[in-house]
Image (tube, rainbow, N blue to C red; front, side, top):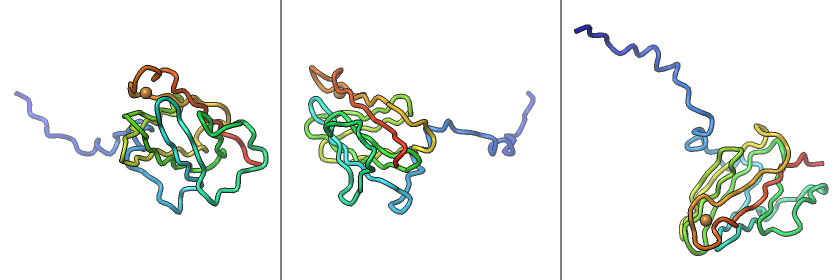
Length: 146
Ligand SMILES: [Cu+2]
């Protein structure tokens, strides 16, 4: 039998798909431009900015913080995710970010909005959470701040 040792030179050529970066390449506090608190409940998402955030004057996409959040383009956004009742999962489909929302445990997800175009993105719940699970649909607006 032909025996060929593992050519470790090729290990350096391994490339991971970009979304996997989200698993370990977590920005620290100084790199984060904005923290958004996310609360999942049956059956909605609610969002709030960190206390000292000055909301840009042209942010007008959300009339409520329920199922709607607007964040600046060109920024590293950290989502601190909590669940009120049962398991949910925060899933920004087009950006490829998904994170469990767990009662009693804060989880986190983050997005560098420099990597995506300004516009409207869907946030789904990706964990079955009861009767109206399929209605847990929120909008993420990424806007160039003025
Ligand atoms: Cu759900």
